[in-house]
Structures are given as structure tokens and as C-alpha cells.
Amino acid sequence: MHKAYVEEVSRFSIDNCTQNSISLKWNKVNDVNGYILDRATTRDGEYDGIAKIEGNSNTEYTDLNLESSKTYYYKVKA
Image (cartoon, rainbow, N blue to C red; front, side):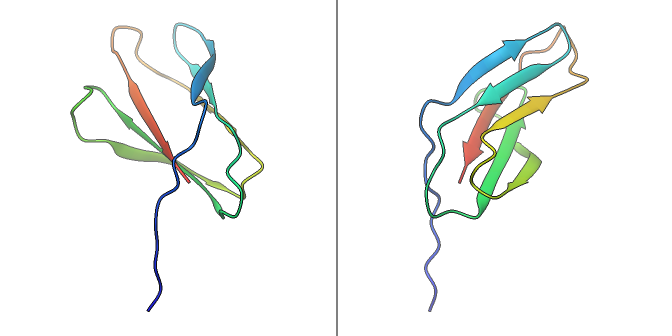
């Protein structure tokens, strides 16, 4: 039987923000195959997967074409 778990990332932060995009970054997690980025429009709402990033070296993501009138919430899983 295989065990799977989600490793929390550290220092998940905003790197850059414009009216219609946001760049996110986080610290590398060792011994993982990649990251999954989720987004919601309410803090306790349903989070949808918006990106699957292969490998553990790429620790940045830019979300484009956002609506300036909305608030977005993000989670990243390793």
C-alpha cells in the first residue's frame, strides 16, 4: 500500500501584483514531484486547481487575466 501526503510549502507570498495579474512564489520543497496551485474567490469557498507545476525547482507562478474587481485566494500544495 502506498502512502500519499501533501507537504506544506513555506514562505508562500506575492512577488508582484498588477491590476490583472499576480505573481506568486514559495520556497522549494525537497523530494516532491511538483506543485498544485489552487484559487478561490472567497476565503472559505471552493478552491479550483489552476496550475500543475512539474518538478520541484520551479517555485513561481503568474496568474493572468484576473478581474480587477474580484478578490482571489490561493493555496499551493507540494
